[in-house]
Image 1 (cartoon, each protein chain N blue to C red):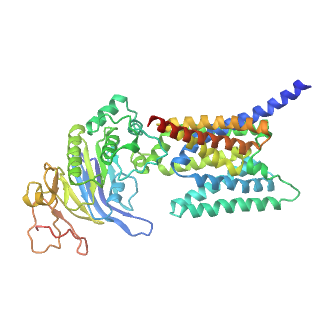
Image 2: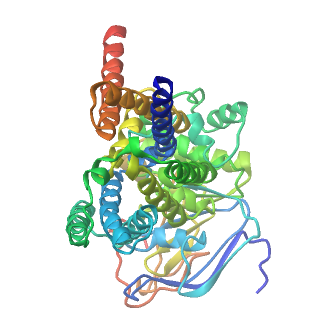
Image 3: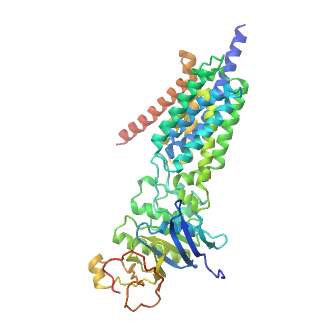
Length: 266
Length: 273
C-alpha cells in the first residue's frame, strides 16, 4: 500500500502485554495532515495503548505502524505530577525539549490564551492554566501532529467547550493534525473529521453529528458551548434492523460487549 | 621543625578539603534528581550495600573502590529492576538496605587476620585521604558531574514526565540507568569522605536546602553544589577545632544550612506579611 500523504498509518496492529492477552487487536488507522481525529472508548478499552503504539512508544505484537520520516509530534500527556521539590517556571518548562527564545515563549503562551504566565511557577497554576501550558509545550516544536491524551479530564462542560475551541484555533494557526483521545463516548469535539470508537478493536468510525443547537442538548448541558461539542452516534452491527447512516463504517464483532447508554437515536 | 609540621597539616587538610569538595560537586546535581524522583531510600540502600562491598574487596584483595562500586551497582540495578516490576518499594528497599548492611558487617568479621576498623567505612575518614584516594575521588566525581551535564536535558525531561520524554524520542529507561550508574559511582567515591551511613545525607540535605531559594532546576543543582561545598569546609573546620569525627561534622553543617535556609525563608515570608 502506498503511504500517500499520511502522517501515521497503522495496519493490522495488535498489542499484547506480559500475559499475552491482547489489549488491542487488528487496528487499521490513518491520519493525514490537518485532520482532527477523536478516539473514544470506555476505560480499559486500550485508548492509551493505541496512542503509545501509533507514536512508537511501544512495539506492536503484530501488524505494523508507519510514521512519516522526521514526523514532528507534539504530545500533551494525560497527567503530569510535578514533585513540589522540583522548581520549575512556565518559561523553563516550555524550554524543556525545545530551545526557545523568550519572545517565542511569550508568543506561544498568548496563542493558547494564557499570556504573561512565563515567570510563574508551574505549581501555582490553576487546572485550566496548567492544561494550556501543557498544550503550549506540545506546540513548541511546531508539530505536524498534536496528540492529546484525555485533555479534558477534570474540566466542566464549559471548560471542555472552551478547550475544544482552542484546539480548533490551534489547528488553524499551526496547520497541524490533531489526534485526541477521550473517555466520553457521546460528547466529542464537533470539529472532528472522524471519530473512532475503540474497545480493544475499532468498533465503528464516522463523522460526529453536530447537535449542540438541538433543544434536547441545550436542556441537558446548558448554553454557551458555541458549537464546540457534538454528539457522536454509534452504529453497530448488533443494532439489528436499523438503517445505517452515511459514512459510518462498522466492523463490530458480534461478541463485543460495550454499551453506549440509552440516549441513542439509532 | 614547626614549619615542617605546619606543612604536613596543611597537606592532609588540603587533600581532605579537595576530596570533600569533589563529593559535593557530584552530590549536588545527583542529589537533586534523588529528591525530585523520591529516590532517597534508594540512595540509602545503595550506600549500605557498599559495606558489603568493603568486605568482599578485603576478602578478595581488590581495591575498596572497585568492591564498593560493583556492589553498589549491583544493588542499584536490583532495586531499579524490582521497582520496574511493581514491587512495593518502601518494603523492598527496607529489606535490601538493611540486609546488605548487616551482611556486610557479618562478612567483615569473618575476614581472617584482618582487624578492620569499620567506623572508617560507616562514618568515613576524610582526614586519611591519600594522594591516590584523592585522584580516584576526583575522577569519579568529575565523571558523575559530567554525566549529569551531558544527560541533563534528557534526565530532566524523563523526571518531569516519562511520557513527554518518550514522545520526544528520549528513552526514560536509559536515563534511569544513567542515574543508577551515577549513584553507584558517587557511593564508591564518597565512602571514604562521609561513610556509608551518611552518603544519602550528602545527596539529600544540600539539595533540600537549595530548593528553598531556587526557581529553576539548574539553579537548584548549582546551589546544592555550593551548599554542599560550604558544608564540607565548615564541617572540616568544626572537626579540626573540636576534634569531632569529620564525616558527621560535615553532615551536621549541611543540616544546619538546611535549618537556616528553611527557617530564613519562613522568616522572610513572615516579614513580608
